Image (cartoon, rainbow, N blue to C red; front, side):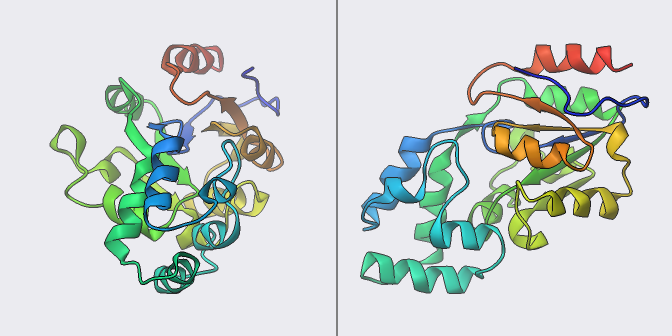
Length: 219
């Protein structure tokens, strides 16, 4: 069910999107399989579907662990040294493909809104998302956004309301003029606490038409 947690008078001017399950379609099983292949026992227990990650995986995403610290801890869990590239490949298993039509939609929305990315993410995934190797349509992904906010760099993570306040303050946005899109209800609850309107999507569904209807209804 899609609905705003807050009723506001101003029209929407800012769109804030999550990455996994929203702009991209996630493949949970593929990632878990890759971590298992690296030697991580009980990998499913660290990556519960629909939840924020547990243990060192959550700590690296919140910035509590650096990439090097995570590699050391992860290598101990696996019982052997594991490289940055190997872990990056395992993390990237969560990415199946971009939401069909999302790049065209972002380009269209760009003419009417300021667009931001807010993702719980880690240095391993971001090393690829920001690289020249990931440039859909031959264009660096970062160019679709006014700014990308990443939990491991903000040292905050969703659903903590503090990360939404950080984005609003840093980008000089009014919560009453902004909408946040995520695939996890708990993350939307955190956003609602700072006055953001919210829109819930389901991983893999075509949510763009309904979202555009929502935007049109706000004007």
